Image 1: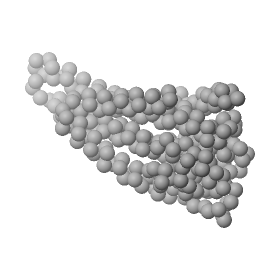
Image 2: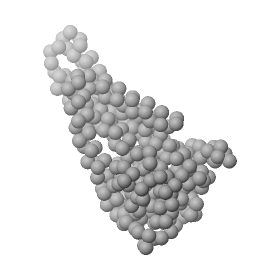
Image 3: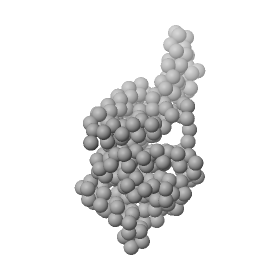
Length: 288
């Protein structure tokens, strides 16, 4: 419940930031133009995200005949979650990871790398795939697309403000002292607002990861199995990095395929692994 409330609050903050930026650059007209442009760009990503990302990572679809144990596991978990059977894919990569995609439960797909199938126990793998099905059930692809649309619109408005400030820098209204001050204020807003929007977008992603951990643990019924899997994946994914990982799709994976610490943690799409494991351990204690 808390993670759902946090997501709603963060999306509301993005909305208010968009309205504020739109008013600064061109009133309602400027806001609507930027929002529509961002929506058009993200609509294609949302509608075709499954095909794009699966092709990007050379995923191959499997059936029960090709991989009966893994396919059967997904089928059982989908039944427990009350979801239609998704398409199942395996990615030819030694780095252990997994993700879910698809615009809704009826057009969903789950994918796991060859590496994750090798290093996890059946219970741990079940926990991971339950986490991915939780993303499908919670419609996280839609929510992340909405957040990306708002953040993209704010970034566009920031660019408009930058150009407006620079083009207006030589006008004579600075004789009264307002020109330079207005230009500096516009440039500051143009830089700070898109960064703030990006931070909020990353926070939305982290909130949905916490929610998927909790929902996935409920689906599989073994929070400690998922916690153990996360610990293994965190270590192994750093030892065996995913060479083809792209920043644009990093948020989809159960563990971040990109590495980075320090200030980069602020822009991470995933929560701290220690916190995720601690929350699952607390959930296991409550379930007992």
